[in-house]
Length: 176
Image (tube, rainbow, N blue to C red; front, side, top):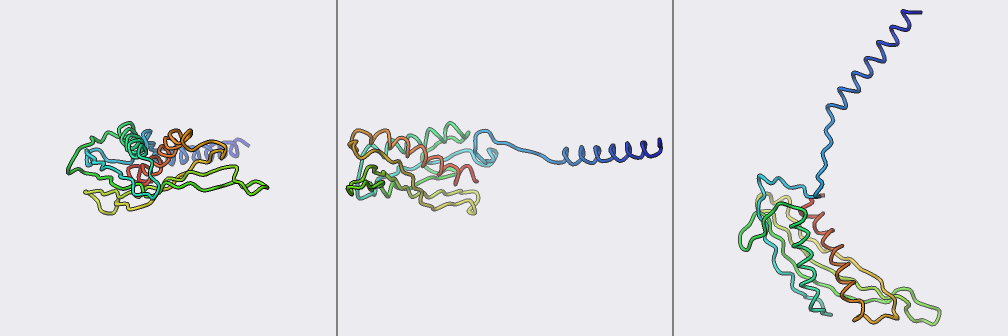
């Protein structure tokens, strides 16, 4: 009986040792800022203006979007924003600012309206062409059709810009 017990202890000890070695070989790495950048390679970024090229134009949108993008990069990376040549470059344009009816009521009127903003982004990594991105991003918010667009436009643009910046960051600097 003691032989069986000592054999069981030996097996359990061996399994625990193997598990401990396996776990110590695993390395879990988290980046709390969301960026996947090697700061010994990447130090600077140039963010160009994002002009509005949409058929429907809301002039404050450009500044709202650009400010949100620059603030997000400054908060979540250690990159220095520069004018001119840089390690990374972000450029693009706001290509869409559209309103569309959504939930239609029984009397054929829309009860909700959707504001959609579309941004085309070109991201250039001067150190590694494989990381380059040329992509279009869209985000939207719905609002009650009884509200005037002029009353909700600033808040909606701010919310949509935040979402767009998050999508753009994850596809470029976040390197997801």
